[in-house]
Length: 282
Image (tube, rainbow, N blue to C red; front, top):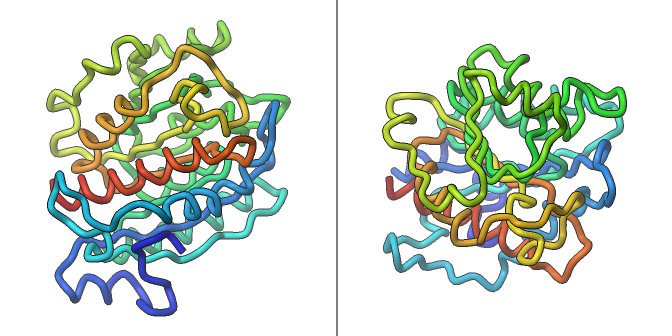
């Protein structure tokens, strides 16, 4: 269970939390590890994120809130299997239940492919994504539902999505960069993320926020499958989450694996908490 969250057995659904007059969030683990490249291990991501959140204080001084007071429920993991398309459909239905209960789904990956389920559930107009990679392949190794094609699937398979904003991207194939030049994609390179703000672009629009932990420089978060140097500082990721969270109806943090001493998982867990505090405060 994510520290500070109520167990799903204690709070039967998000509506119960709503009766207490608090903002509601539903944590769902999505340990998919089917298309990861170079270094697998994202199946361990949700458990590691929960584990490395243990030492964090319940109280947030910046917003004067206690995490345990904000109606967060942890519904555990949706066990993954090898049929990625079928798994995403099942995960979408689980996350959509949270949306139908007027709660904000918080997905813990798992490979980045699971973000497609989160976007399908929330049906946003704008997706903001922190990532080292464009993930705009039409298919990777013949797989359309690959973590390297997730941004393309979000743009092409989710009718509600009008635009994707990619923050921290520093690599992609020639074909991906050609697709990124279209009007529905905005790419903000790492050196410009520190100065980036939504500037009203998210006002009165449905928004989804995704953080691929490899957006961070691997010196800060080595526990991820496809490390890409020259990335973001943790504080830059924090500031993006704080800026976007008040507008977002869904959030995920993905691509954490077990190949470090917890740096990536600790950063991911902290970003989950920053999202909750900022959304509840916004």
